[in-house]
Length: 251
Image (cartoon, rainbow, N blue to C red; front, side, top):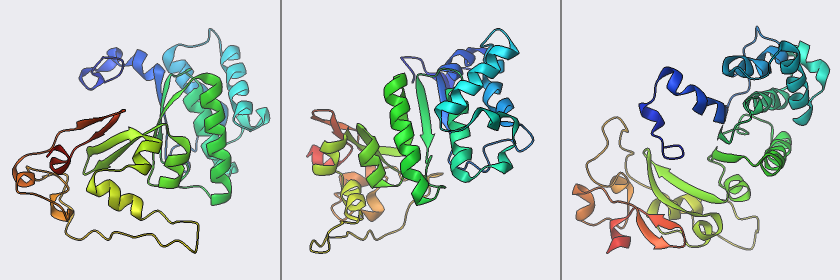
């Protein structure tokens, strides 16, 4: 759903205006850029598809503005992706995502393929862009420390299902779902005098192709009940924007 519209049911030209408003930053900056296109062509292509800017000159000017905004130089527009580092390539991908003036950007593990020394730079840039352009991000990540740093609200998924969702501080301080508790117990504590209780999950992970009829976490849950086998739990509102899908919490 996007602003009340079920975009999964839209096709072809019906999707075009939504695609302008929704863009994506991909995980792998090495595979997500066409090696046969210059940076200028990569950044201006979405503008051409969406019919933005009235001339090629305007599109190039827009590309120059974007490429400088993400920390690169305007003479990079004539170069090819293989001439750049991973961090620079991801900046090109970010400039491309911004080219249609979107409202919403899906950030699919945008820093996981980058060196640690570069990750903080890219995250800081994403935060600055969010504030200055009024963007909304869906930040997909397995790096829980980074999730806590950049997110206002967190949704925890297991086997393709949201099992808990809450404002960031609320979730990290008052997690309720057994999977969330186990997940956050694995986050390293930067204090040698404090020992965290790391919860090791046992049991097999069900296949998402043929998920179990009840709770998807049943086979690995240490506090399951008989009702968990036959009925999938729904998200329960705990107040303050905190929702959790667990029969034990409902009870």
